[in-house]
Image (cartoon, rainbow over all chains, first blue to last red; front, side, top):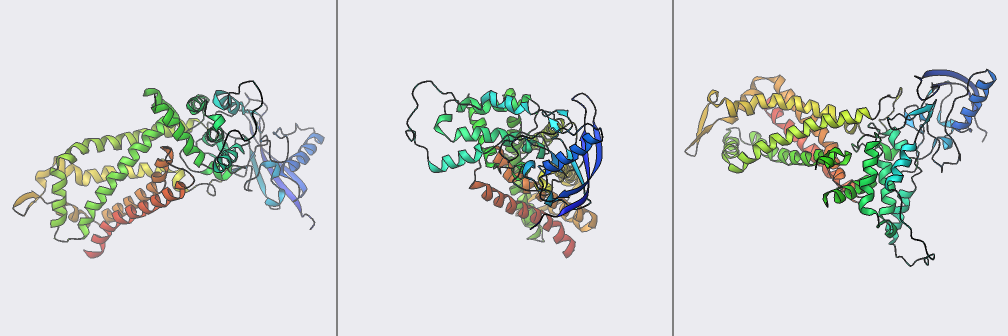
Length: 253
Length: 226
């Protein structure tokens, strides 16, 4: 089946020169976009046209373009990663849009994710949270034999489900409070469910939550929007686990 | 402790604990209030009200309950203010209805409306019973003289259609607030996992519906019958 052509689209996009400038919306018109192209391909085509007109191209984050690196972002028509479910923006296709539509494209909005330029935000806050506790200590020595550490099948599955988090920040963007709880809970959970993660377990939740608060993320009010908008469908049951780990470690001393 | 309450999860811990305390209170309150519609002579409700007014355990619980309400309400404004600060630049276009329920996104609005209801509700009944009892008539049941609380309540509903609708609305608002608040409290306390998620939500919805219908039924009963 041949892809249809969207004859005309209006792209209302956030333009901001740098971190300190004010920024505003600009609307560009783009013609003849195949419904088979990805959203980022549409942005590439738009940027080509802008360059030909002598306009500064729109800056946006992208890397692997196959939905696994977590680099692409974009708040499209009021939703992180746009109107499709369980996909990143690079995996979002133009068939999800109507001919003649005005598509609003905004950067993630959070105090902890300041805009650097146009649609690119600084997500190093996530890295700082990981540095605060999202690691395991590994001693040097011989490589242990596979299967010497028994892990229950269900624990391994839950750990892997949490480890699917690509750290894109859609949870923060989707949350009405700009809370990073889904991200932090995924990073705490995938280690908490495995024996290797037990060494730092007591301190991990404490340190990561303290860092999360310090960086200016909001609090969780359990709306569940993060789980729905997460491209990897990370469950909010991880947040319950994070709360549990945190409260136990707090109340134990 | 101050460090615990300064952390985001600690702050929410206080909301959950006070919230569940208020949930327990509502269950007791609704149970006693339903006596209003099961005995038109008012004897049953007056006995219940008199038991609550003279019970020493309730005397101890009363200031605690006030404190619970105060913490839950004041803390919620503080928490919401913290959350507003986390997004200084707002989105131009938002489409959140598919990803979360309206009640979950508007707990502060629902809570504030319930608070307005609560203030008027306290002025209507609690204030009169507590500080202005000489304006109430008394009744003798089983040889004991007590304040006729039934007449106080019944007269308000019989005398004003507007108050009836106001109290029906109050019940419904509380129900919406609980539809998110109940399971959310257990989630925040960490007492949740993939099995209990659906169970807590089902129990929470059931409780919210019982509370909404239960409280709304009382003014509705007076509205229809008298």
